[in-house]
Image (cartoon, rainbow, N blue to C red):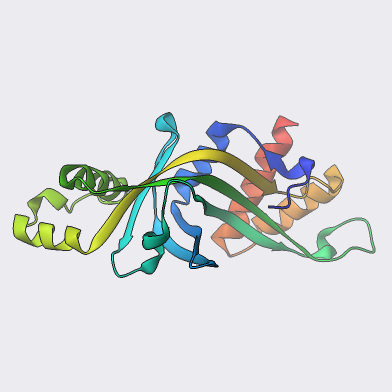
Length: 202
């Protein structure tokens, strides 16, 4: 990804935090010579530098997984339109502020039934407060598992890009924050919070 230095984020803790908060991500690989993408939820294991997920067995993407192919997982955080009318200096043009993490790695398909159940359990407990996978009838659960392919991705490269108006003056950044804070859209206000947090650290 195009990554100007002033937008780069290298702190693994910050990157893994975004990955865990926005864990419904896009897996990109090469299948039959062409880019292929699937949107799926991931379980993020920062302490193991690992991602895990699964996809429908009917999805052909997994048939091209091998240990020699590097895949890309794109985690997209909050983002917002930035109007040039919010700047003090003119002329200016519109832009977009956003936060994203690109994780590259090697895929390993998980086939052992108990290991697959463990990965599914971790994914479920990440989101579910009441429903328990273990309460399903075993024959039903076994049938569902037969319809998916589980896999892990060992992260080999990790890049973060937080484009938060760092290339503008502090006055412009403060004006953008003020405008975004008034937005009815939660994503806009989330970007404002991230911009304010960054300014406090400068």
